[in-house]
Length: 256
Image (cartoon, helix red, strand yellow):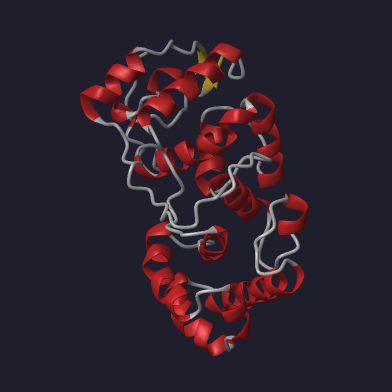
């Protein structure tokens, strides 16, 4: 059951780096490669298990990076996070939720009021319409409570599978899918876990190879890893606990 008095943050999500990271990497097997950028059997069960093991050790106790006190706040924060950093969203939401603390209050707000409070998150006009629309549906159709099924949560304006997976997984601990954001998409391709480019197809590929009881944590771990270590322009491979398992062609350092 959700604990509405708990503020959930990413305080425990700082990556393991340096000598400790390299020690974790050395504890995992080396993924044999055909050539640069190509692993012999990228989806081998033992390689998938090793990737999950390394991520778990790198981000123990990982949680969603969006600060929230309940399912509704997390829904709004996730909608606002589109094309915006979680750091920026976390700076914006305290004032937003102080002004409009419930779905009913947000549904009754004027768009200019909402736009002014979320302006720095980008695309603020569309986001204001989405969060107000979601507030109205939650208030009128679901008694002020965020629904707990993917089918129902997708009826909220501004909510697609990514947001649905975030809310269902992070707040309700319901694993119905894998969160696929830009980091999960990029790292899944870099690790050769998928060849797809559409989020829905990437999610389906990941759901086939990642055990369901790891879907929620795996998403958070990969997102944090993409932000802190496996960054897009210059991955910090020397500090990567997945380094021995990765044969990406753009590695900046390699032990094998």
